[in-house]
Image (cartoon, rainbow, N blue to C red; front, side, top):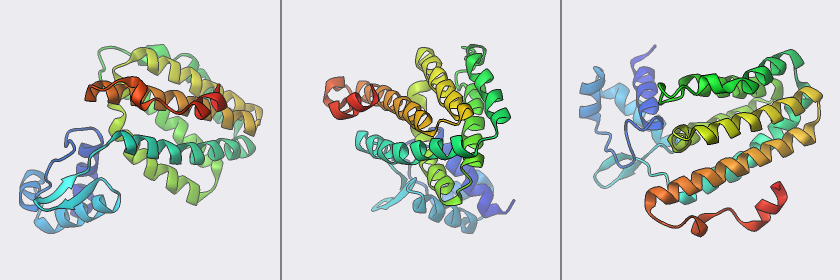
Length: 231
């Protein structure tokens, strides 16, 4: 792997997993020294991070971008549009055997939520398998590229759910419903199940974000129209 790619992958992972929190200044000299590369690969990596919206130029230098409540809502606006359509296409183009394996894994997910693994690595590895199966079944490189961009930013707010075992169990059941609809070839049911899952996910993450900021949950709950549509 090229030095620039290695620096990019490392910095991107550190930003998405929270090791480099919002507001961290990404100084070229400091990061080059820490990563054991020259400034040129770091400069290249930082340009790519800026292009993805993970970093921004400020007066004091390049900083890791903030993730606000508005950012979360905006991400989910895009996510609903992309993932509901992806579920429809996946149901049309599916390989049933692939999704049957996933359905069984989501039905037996409790063992993956071992409290000794605070990062929930096995659980999120299963979710990644689900994402990959959807991407393969969609067979649309433009849609897949758009979804992967959104997932990059969603990874930054994943920590809001990973400490909540109850929510992850609910999410697994929601994934299982999506997968079952895809196996049946029912695109509209798969899209609806996806919409319900995303509504629940957004509600949970907004409530967590509000709690962290010390506000009231009512101030940022999803609008009533969305609630009616996904009930």
